[in-house]
Image (cartoon, rainbow, N blue to C red; front, side, top):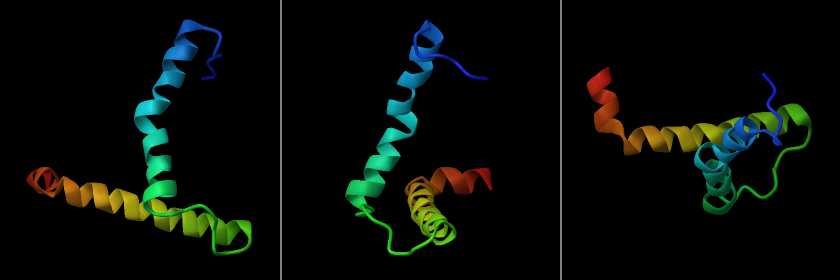
Length: 72
């Protein structure tokens, strides 16, 4: 579903980026120092980005480990 930014629904959906996407990208760039990729070629860059995202997600899981363990 494509929502245009000129509509109220579009502006509301775009505002969610502040909560979901932007903080993670900021952490990748500032916290982990991901400014440039070390590999060359799209498949290798994709793999490197996947490793960075995996590191962020594992960190989130470890931070909330007690809650996660209760579900398992």
